[in-house]
Length: 124
Image 1 (cartoon, one colour):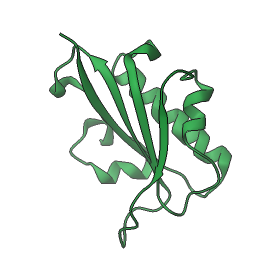
Image 2: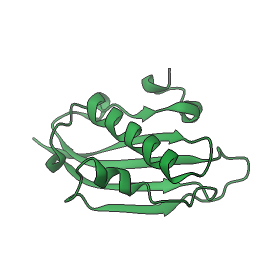
Image 3: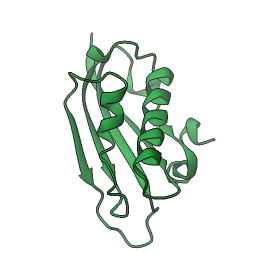
Image 4: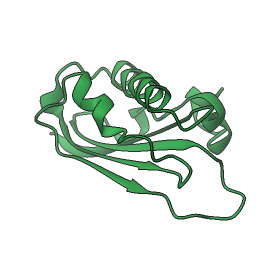
């Protein structure tokens, strides 16, 4: 039976530069896809991207389009500005059709974002 599963991920950039945001987002998406064995974008129901308020040079969703997610509904939004939260952070929530149980979904945290979820294997 196929269910819709959520896959989380996050990464950071050194500065608010469109090229850095797009490269980091692409790296994150490719790591999520590979870690979860997603080979067909038809398996992806939708994606929500958020950025901290210090990132506004580009939409992270552009990186998804650049790797071929042309038919996947994408949305970008801003994180709530929590004091002392991690700066220059890009987060994604992918909704995917999957036969895997939640315990087999691999969430991916890269760069400084590894600190957000030390309990997640990708953060090791």
